[in-house]
Image (tube, rainbow, N blue to C red; front, side, top):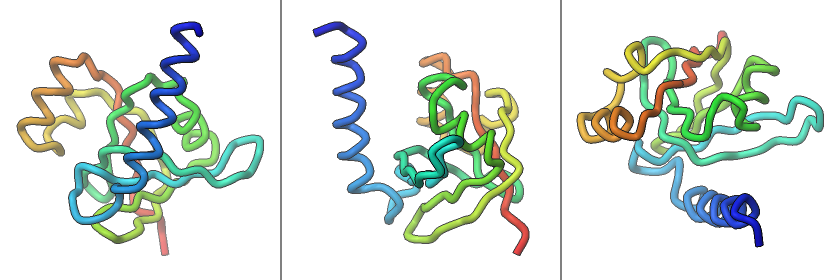
Length: 128
């Protein structure tokens, strides 16, 4: 089995496990719901979303070419489920670590800096 296929299997398993516990009590585990840019299918991914301004900021752990990031940027909308509540968001954009980092608690800031996470997705609350 190639390293790439093994990594995809591990990522798939971890996503399923985190989806089972995400979006509930602890803010560190949230869910981003988005629509596929070509399929139109709804997807859910576990993320770490924290409030920033009038929306939420999410670290992009696997790069800006990740499917969920591409889908969100293409459709211009997503929903973040955190602490048991859904937040419809729009106007997503990629921002730098320096713009996003203050939204996170200190242990997570240290982690993102040491892990060289440079890109974050920021989306704003959708108009009612």
